[in-house]
Image (cartoon, rainbow, N blue to C red; front, side, top):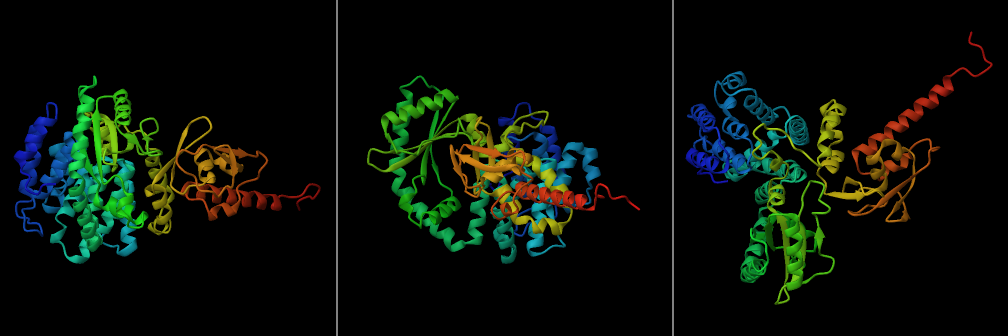
Length: 499
């Protein structure tokens, strides 16, 4: 985000990217914010208005409804002036006022410290997502600019804000399919949390990009000429450099061996439709030899967060290895901005949320966790459910079940239905009978075998199941079983009369 954005930059961007935008609304919101923040200066020494301008510009880049862009300009006016939510409601309407009110509520947790503060911030983010996910988009834009200007904060606040960004905001962005936002949040946090590693990884990346820059440029040129010879007219080919934090995590998995990482610089191809994606995959494989086992079709089988693309890795002419990513423009927008792309340019602000069943669970979570103490106790389980990398498992009929990495057949059974879990006796994984505590992997086909006479789940399952849903259902069934047993024990026996 550019800190030097002016209102003229914002209006120019909106004018060129939105259809018939209400510029009068935008000017009114800016004027309102400019007056509210007139005497306020950020810790960086810049006028405060630079912050809401940066936030609003990012929301416009995401293509969100102009109400959200205007709310971005206004998101701090209640704190910095005598303006009330009712004033905003009167001047800008219910929708904008409600967005500003929700963002304001997310701001502070003054009575909490340490883990309690962390849990409270997470709880409030869940509440915001469950009520209106647009609030979270605004919070992402706000946090991104705060990370860029974090140098103005004292050291202890830098660490707290960076940790919160890495452990709460970035994973939520990932689950919403917003890879661009996730990557920026991670890199911005990485620089403050592990500065020595950040500099080391940055230096490695700089060297590798210089080494491979010419080679990737040649492949891009060759790919453009290859496609130009076909009937495909509208296409774009460019290089994509791996994010620093993503590289850091991958190097940890590969024993710090940079030579085992093939996607430092990938070639991305953007086309008009799905048919062209597969056509270009065929062209690439005719021109270069693909690596066995490195072709991934996320178009036919999207990731749980909705991500779609074709990935293939090839041996270049000089025997080096290069990854290609092929997708449509729509897939690209979804990959960059995830669920936010469903809101792009929707004049009625209507929601179009697909493959986000886990978000519906947020409302249930809030009802189940009545106290902050309960929330803190279940925080780790929830982090597994919501934030851990996802896998997709198939039923024998081809339905896809979205589970966290490390899930077992029991987690799968309860994800289908409580009774399937309660009556589960064994499981076939890819047509082979397997233990119920094995770890499932994406693409597995799982068939749960049940016994209708089974009384209920085995309490030992609690030792290995991963999801909060499965754990709760096992405990519920056990409590129900105990109640039934007690009722039977206390029921008068036949032939014995009550006195």
